[in-house]
Image (tube, rainbow, N blue to C red; front, side, top):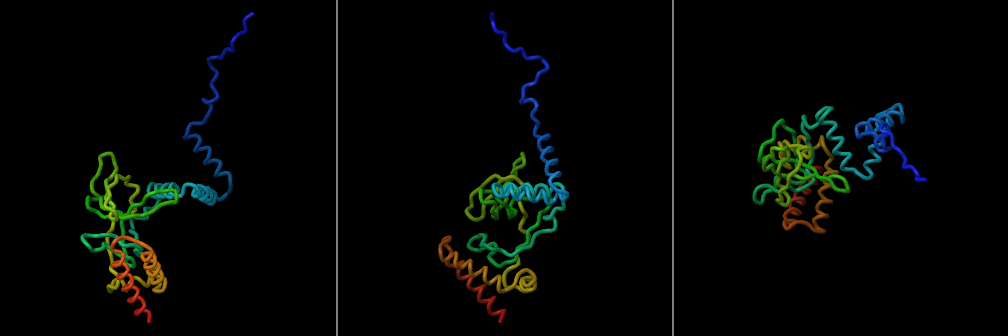
Length: 226
């Protein structure tokens, strides 16, 4: 007597068909996070902190995308900070140097030739760099040239943190009127001293010129605090 093969009914579904689609899976995950604590923001922060251990760059990008899409555009008001690096400019001049005050903004429209502050991702997190916007691609990406090594890349617009708007040079009257509100002279001097030591260990071909400029700035800071 022949054994009968199992018969699958037409309304039977394979096990995989019962799996949630991606949208439902994310919704289920959101429900689980909501149920962890009455303070959803604290639960979400802890989840992101755990993800940051293995994917720090992705957590940053996701947070930036969320704020730009649903929240207050932090870059609309601009970003003011103190430079921690030498950025190459035209010829032998630096676009700006450590201790200069630098202001970035995010305009509604970018143009070719704009100097941009952008970021990249690696396993250790993110790094920032300055680049020149070369051209636009109709599909949405932009071609940029890294000012440090002059290499060109195509990047997504969401990798842009801002456009360079103003550089307030070290030692100018405007610089003196602002610097004390941003950082203490001793902390700034300590930062410059560490930069000098790093250059003593190695650096670009013009490191001697960079060291001389940093030492000059240190001398100005020292004399101004006496």
